[in-house]
Image (cartoon, rainbow, N blue to C red; front, top):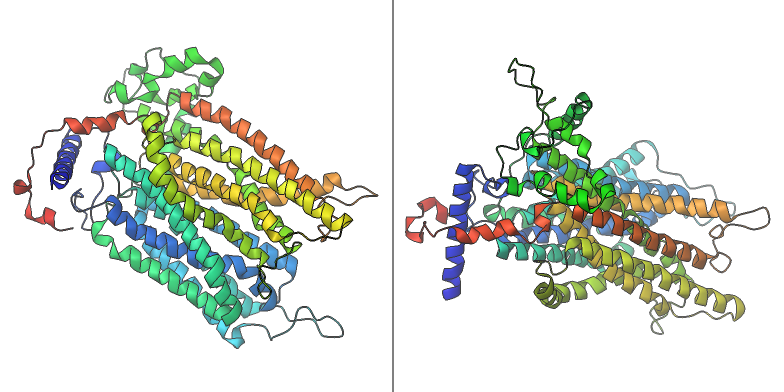
Length: 630
C-alpha cells in the first residue's frame, strides 16, 4: 500500500513538473509534448510505462517471426517454384534483405516528420500484411507460377520455365510490399516503445533500459520460432501455407499494437527533420568567412537557454585543453551558422542564414554518432559469415543427432537466438543491478562500453571459427574423418553474447541521443548497419578471391568444396579486421565522450534528479475527471 502511494505521489510530481516546464519553456520537449490517443497531454497515471510497451513488444515478436520465416527459406522457393537460377536467386534474396534495412530510413523519416510512430507502424504494418497475403495467394495458385519442373534434372529434359511477365510481376510486387512494410515498421517499434518512458524520471530511465533488453528478447524469440517451427511448416506443408502462417503472425502483431492504443504516450511529428539540418549547413557555407566570437554567449539563441544545459558552451574549453585534435573534431566551423551579422538595418536574418546554438548542437550530435555507427558495419560482416559460410561449414560435418534424426545445417542459425533467450533475462535481472552499484549508470554498463565489449568478443567468434575449420579440414583431408557438427557451436555461442551486447547497446545509445524529434530516424540508422555489413561481406569475398588467386592457384573461396578452399584463412582475415575495427571504435568512442556536444542523456542523469524537487501540489482528489480515462 505504501509503495502504491509512493508511486502515485511520484507521478503527481512528474505531472506538475511537466506543467511547469511547459509554461517556462524548459528543456522537456521530449516529455511534455507526448499526447494520448485523443491528442491531449498524456497522463503518467494512465499512459506509458511497461504496460504500454508490452503491446509493442508483442508486435516486434510477431513481425520478426513473420519476415524471418520468409527470408530464411526464400531462396528455396525461388529455385524450386519460380525456377530462377542459383546466382539469380541469391541476388534476389540479398537485394530483398538489403532493401528492408535501407527502407528503415524512410520509416524513421516519415514517423519523425509527418505521421508519428504509431500511425507509421499501423499503416505500413498493413502494407507488410498485404505482401504476405499476396505471396501466399501466388504460391497457392498454379496460374501464377511457372509449370512444375525439377531444376536438378538436366539429362535430355527441356530447361525449366522461369517466372516472367505477369507471374514475376506479382511475385516481386508482393515481395517488395513486404520489404516496404517491414522496413518502415522496424525502427518505429523500438522508438515508440522507448517513448513510453520518461527519461527525466530516474526510475523510468531504469525501466527504459529493461525495455531495450526486452525488445531484443522479443526479437530473439521471433527469430527462434521462425527458424524452427515456421521453417518446418514451410518444408512439410508447402510455401503457400508457410506464407499464410507469416501473414497470420503479422496480423497477430497488428492486433497487439492496436490493443495498446489507449495506453500509449505518442510523440507528435515535428515537421521535416532534415530542414533544420540543411539550414545549418547552408548558413555555415554562407558565413564561412565570418570569425566566431570568443564569447559563445553572443551566438544567436544562447541567451534564451540555460548555459548549464548547453554542451556547446559548457565543455568547449575543457575539450580544447584536453586534446587539440579532438577539439578540431568537435566541428567548430559549424558555429559560424550562429553568428549575427550587424548591418545597422535591424533586419531579421532568414533561418537559412542564421541558426540557433541548439540547432547547431543538434547537427553536431548527429555527426558525432555516425562514426559509432560505422564501427558496427564490420560486426555485421561477421554476422553474415555465420549465416552463409558457417552453414556451409556445418554441411561438411556429421549432422547426425540420433539414428533417425539429422540436424539441418541451416538450423545452426538458431543457436545465437537460443543463447539470447537465456542470457537476456539473466543479464537484465542479475547483471544490470549488480553492475549498477559500481557504475551508477541506469543500464549497468553504459551503452558505449557495452558496444565496445560486444565488438571485442566478435573477434573471438571468428578466431573460434578459424580454429575449428582448420581442425575440420585437416581431419577430412588427411584422415578422411568427419567430425560432429557440435564442434561448430562455440563460434555461434560467442557471437550470440557479442550480439546481445552490441545490438542492444547500439539501439540504446542512438535512442538516448538528445536529438529533438529524431528518435525513430536514429533507430533506423542502426538497421542500415546490417545492410552495409552484408554488402561488405560480398565485397570481401570477391576481393579475397581476386588477391589470393594466381595462374597456378585458385582463390581461398573459389571452389564449392570446403576441403579444397581455405575458409580458415578467410576467418583469420576477418578476425584481424574485427580487432582493428575494435581499436578504431575505441578512438571514436573516446572522441564522443569528450565531445562538447555529447548527449546529456549519456551522463548520470543530472536533469532527471530535478524531478524530486517538485512539490506534491496536485492531489488525487483534485484531478480532473477525464484524467481517469486512458
